[in-house]
Image (cartoon, rainbow, N blue to C red):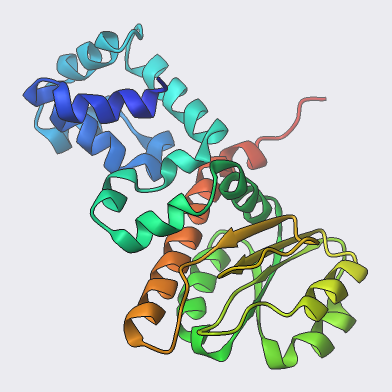
Length: 251
């Protein structure tokens, strides 16, 4: 049982203080590196000695070693960032997560994290959703280029390099174009991730499966919710790894 699973168990079986502290930590996993015993104490209205005892009850010498192990767990198992508790009451998110294994999610997160230039190929109906996602990624230094499918062939033919990664997104009824996938591979993009409803892409580094969509507003909302969840947690993964990327290597 890893540290995340221990916290989830304490939410159900721990004392009142343990449940309160565990809930707060699980709700703030994306900011794990900035967690302090003082902040947790204030937010949960418990004493700092209680935070130390909480860590010790889990087998750690104190809060610092607990925090170190928590960060280590999140870096090695990024799928833990996905909202497990929320999905129990959300059929849409549950379907999305159940259709994609942790290894695939891990690969997708790492493609986002390791790429400076990201091309988002998308149908027109996802333009509004992508504009918000792209702003978040721009804020952490990513160069994000949205490309509507109708312009993708001509634009990518002339611009792709081996420093670029491409993400193909599905529309209401359409799947990513196999011809476009072949073109991307021929132009040696560093990584290719595909999100689709049914058929996987053999040439992609990773394929993620989104809920089957149709023209109904409800199914389109399911698609957008799944994509928003995916990119939000990929963003969390990037934040968790930013300190590692910025740390200079010793000579």
